[in-house]
Length: 71
Image 1: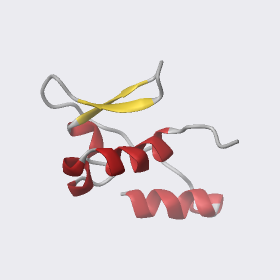
Image 2: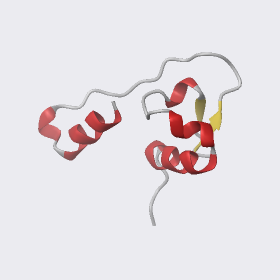
Image 3: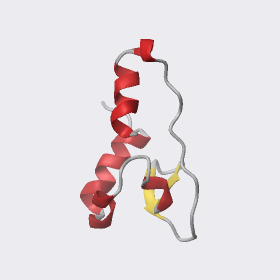
Image 4: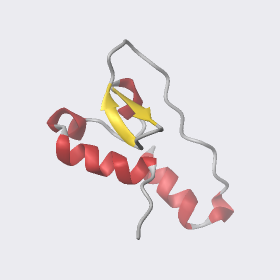
């Protein structure tokens, strides 16, 4: 069983919302908000918000390269 994460939910939102396909993972929070209780991205009802991609050391291997791809 795969647990739903923000990343996997982002990929699913790209299937559901055509306008989401135009946004990168970093830009996604500007138009969508993460609903923690249902673990889904939902279209934003209010205005602009600052998103965040956390720092990852280059020595972290795959995590570092995934972050690089997402940014």
